[in-house]
Length: 69
Image (cartoon, rainbow, N blue to C red; front, side):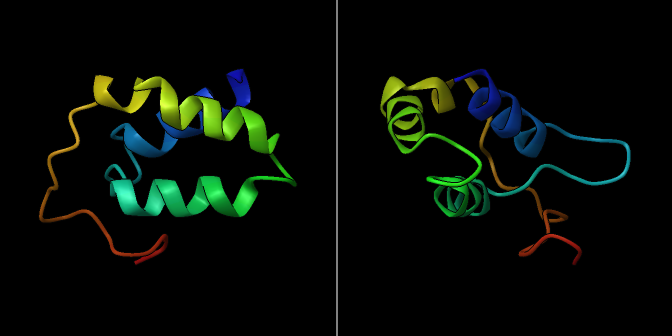
């Protein structure tokens, strides 16, 4: 669970080298890693927990559509 939470936090938090990712991108990354990088049951539990509600998910104009944009 900590790996999922840490990954989400890293993607949704402003970094000196990049803006936060959009929620759609974060969800795509979680689902892509489910079953390989993350336990699928923990990904589902995290998503159902409401933890994403703790983030200010207002889109910003400089948020890239894809990593590396």
